[in-house]
Structure formats: structure tokens, C-alpha cells
Length: 75
Image 1 (cartoon, rainbow, N blue to C red):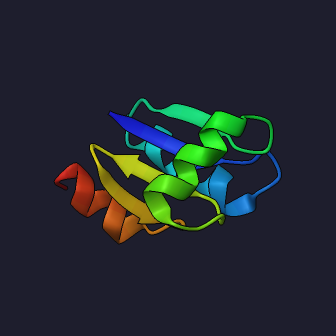
Image 2 (cartoon, rainbow, N blue to C red):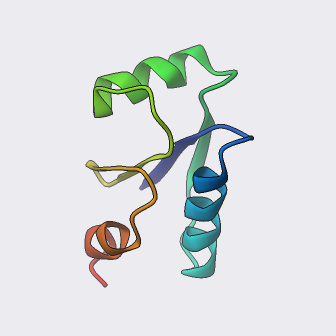
Image 3 (cartoon, rainbow, N blue to C red):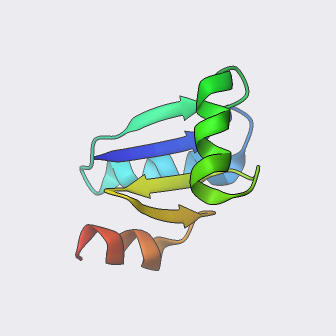
């Protein structure tokens, strides 16, 4: 399962989501600018407030990092 913590105005969030879409990966998007519970999850998992944060089966990737996303997906 993939979860992307993001905001609507973050360019790196958009890039991360587009990258996952281009790989054919489905994911749950959590907009932390409006979702208080999602914001709490984000801090609990990553220990920071920055976005994007990508959770791929429990592997937490802070920021848009293609190499780490590929690694977590086993590519």
C-alpha cells in the first residue's frame, strides 16, 4: 500500500504523485493542509512537517526521491 502525504500547492508533491502514476502505481493521497488526522500521521511517521512524504508499505520517504521510491517498490 502506498500513501502520499502532500498539499495541493507543493510542486514536489505533484511530481511525486505524477511519478507514481507514470509507474502505474495506485496510492492514497492525504492532503495534510486540510486533514488534521493525516497531519498527525505524517508527523508520527516522518518526525517532520515537510511534504511530500511517501509511505510505501511502511518505508518512509521524505521528499521526492525517485531512487528511494524505486528501491521501495523493488525496481
